[in-house]
Length: 182
Image (cartoon, rainbow, N blue to C red):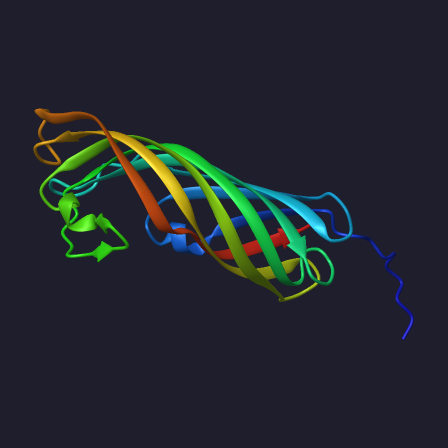
């Protein structure tokens, strides 16, 4: 069959992480081709909304990532190395989660405000849905350094700890990206 449309390499991707969308966190990613098998992805995330009751889930962060694609860019398996940095104001989130030395259940009765920076490695796969659309799945693990102040409760202003450090090791990236290529 004769193809009347000219062939065009796709060198830029615009994406949204559906996992972040599910938590009401606005996000946008932009990925650029650097060569046949390398791309640079930069994503940003913002949640500035007020939550119901005494819950806080405000944050912003950026996460640049260099990706190596095993076949062609924007399709199939890839490995990545990412950095991340941002600020947070979270608390009043009821849970009983303890994972790899981090006790997330402390978010139930306290509010934490501070910043974080770190990085990690990731693995992902991009499913080609159509000429310009992909679905990308990705998981990453790594390290984050966190400096924070702790407050009595999510809605209270009484500071009970200042300039506390935490060293987090564990998942640092989870993505279900809907991708548009152009």
